[in-house]
Structures are given as C-alpha cells and as structure tokens.
Length: 389
Image (cartoon, rainbow, N blue to C red):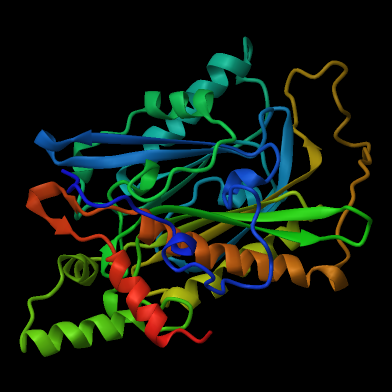
C-alpha cells in the first residue's frame, strides 16, 4: 500500500539552483536523452500476497538484435548478479535488452528476453538466429516484497521490450525499483543526464544514468556534501533519547541491498573506454553515501550507441569466413579529451540516486513493513541551512 502524500519532486525542483556539477542536463534529464535509447517500467503489485516488485527494461537501440553497442562493465562490489557480463567483458559489446529487476526474478527475466528473441527474431534451424546473451541485473527487495512469490514472469519482460519508449524514465517506486530501500528511506528507480560539448562545431554528446538504488543506511546519506543522514539521526536522538531503529535501517542490517547503474552515451567510445565510464559511477555513488558494503552488489554497465557493431548472425548469406579477418572502421574519442564524459558519468549517477530517493513514496509492503519516503520539506530546509552556496 502506498501512502497518499503531496506530489513527489526531483531534487532540482525541491532545491532550485542546487549545484549538481558543471555540465548541463539533457532536455528530459533522463536516460532517454541519449538518442535511440528506449525504456519501459512495469510495477507488479498484489498486496494480498505481499508483492511489491517490478521490471525495468532498457533497449540500447530499437534494432538491438541487428546492431550491437560497444559496452563495458565495472564491479565495485560483486555480491550481486549481472547476467551477460562475461559476454560483455569478452566481446566488448551488448546486443540485448538490459533488464533490471529483483534478485529472484533473474531467471524469469532472462527467459523473457530469450522468448522475445525466439518469437521475433528466431531461426528455424537453431532457435535464435544470432549470437547474443541476455543482460539482466538485480537488487534484493525482500523487505518490502514477497520475493519468493516469484511474481515476475517472462511475459512481463516480453511486454517491456515491446512497449519501451523514449519518454522520460518514471522514477521512485517504478519498474524494478518498486520495492527497493536506500539510505534510510524508500529507494527505487532514478535517472539523470549530462551534455558535454565536443570539439567539432555544434557537436554535443550526452551521458545519462539510470539507477536502481537499494543500498546504504541513513547515517551514510549525504546530499551535495551535506551530511543529511547524520543531521536527521541527531535530531531524532534529541527528540527521543532511545529512538527505535528505522525500518529501512533494520532491513539493511539484515542484508544490504545493492545498486545497479546503467550508463548510456552517444559519444563514440570503444569497450575499454566504456568500462572507464562505468567506473565513474563509483564517484557518484560515494558522494551520496555508498561504500560498497560486504553483501552489496554494486555493478555498473556503460554502453555507447555511436558505433553500430554488427551482431553475428548464424544464418547469414553468404556466411562470414571466421578465418579471414574482416575489418570494420569505427570512430572513437581520443583518451586525452575524455575527462568531460567521465565527470558527466559521475554527476549523472549522483543525481539519479537523488531522484530515486526524492521521487519514491512511502510504502507499506510485505508483512506490514513500512519504509518512509524522504521528507522533501526537511531536505529543502536542511540544505538551505547547511549547503555551500
């Protein structure tokens, strides 16, 4: 059950003029600011069974089954899952939808991707006519969601692939973030983007992040450098000498929950540069209060849509001779000019986490557990008092 409350707002709307880095946002301040990237979020709620979960589906481009994207993966702390990561590390590309969901839904999500591949791009002889591995990421939502109800089904993923759009990504209790808890509050799905000018006239590149935030405790929460969590905890202690532990912190004491970050860009990066971009998500995570705790799966994937990487087809006519090297020419950013993109990745990740927290709503879920939303009025008052202007 979601508790009725005033409309939720993103951090920039809560604290106008807040400093979130030097790079401007894209038009939507969302992952879909990267041209061609499509996203769908689906919530799966059945209160009678304690189900509060969902699926987020990302398409790197509309014809992902024909044209792959260079990609890279970085694991800050590896107590989690990102299927297809070995494929990405070995071949340097992603040629699959990227699905973000809950821990016990990984198998169903993987199956859903394969079912879609077989139904829409199948081959009579080999089932699926091209060489690719589904990419499915997870965080654990078992405090607010009955995770062993196995509510996510392959059909949800098939629908997400078919229905993905370029609209701004819905945030908070949406998609895979429906039942997530983060930094002492209700967490979930968040997104943000940055635009970096290139050398050529009128050339601009977008770097954007989508996060599924499910990590950390209240005491670690920082907002643009202000130790918000410590301030709130101190006020609670002053009002009540022995305040009861927050439900959210109780959840994290049992099992810290992780964060998935997906970064997209239209800057022409090769796989190693994509990996470097993915690493910078760690900077944004650390600014907000993520430390990569022992049981946390902090896993980041970055991909570039600039170059169209052919997907190997099993039924190609004529077939490619695997023993005669075939050359493809691609554009790449010079390493000495990449710093703006790296900064943009860190800043977009940081703001995406804030947006996940600010847009999330108080939720009473599995076994009556309640996790409160971030108090936006208190955020504004605290930042107005302590934020460096």
